[in-house]
Image (cartoon, rainbow, N blue to C red; front, side, top):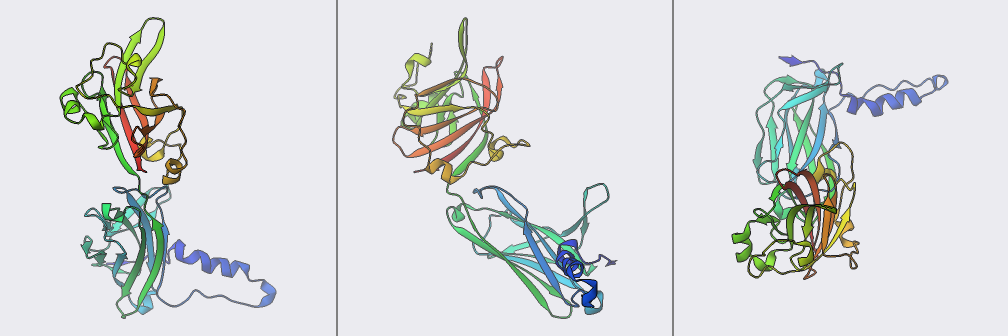
Length: 327
């Protein structure tokens, strides 16, 4: 099967720009290069966080008269996690704006930082998507990539991308919290514990989640440091759970990684580095869905942003997501 793609738009745009920029009186004719070509763009946005993907689109094209594409590969300066892969489908956008994938080769193979696809169809042009799953070993480092393709006539093309800095912050998504049971939050462990577990990890418990409906008092959903007993009504803390924390409530700070909504911003390492909440209290109450709190632990070791994904008044529960930075 010969996939009769024409040169990809990503490859043609520079050539067409050259044609359009030539004045007729110049008498110049610009002809697309009769050679193997490639191009690449980074599709993913925001900070590069361990556990997330850095996504690219790699385009390659060769005139039919010169041969066909037989393989493509990406070499990362730091080997990606196991979930790293190069698509074995070439994508184009149809008239309805939908991305349509056509299989052009075998599934990709990972080996020593290299991810490769062997083509199994007669293909002269393709755009493959590459998903680099950021490993823990890349935290705080810069990563570069070399994309390359080989044609049946023996020629190769390559394209360098990067370097890209990987954030040092950590992230965890969709932790369920519930009044009196899954209520004890550890920033160090980025985990939620019940009373028994909290007692065995007392030195790590920074916040208590609770829900209170009190007549004539605005309370609702709260995240309160164990030291703030005034804001922990009718709660008997597990033995040893007594730490303090600085807690600063904010509205409408929808981090796109944590919230995964259409609109928002990205919280990055720099935001934690420049954060100043020295005068913040040790509690936050009346929390709503899509609100959040900045937190600094009592030992000054961690800063975090806790986003409230959802709340359930009837169930006295909520779902939270956390970004954490180690100072």
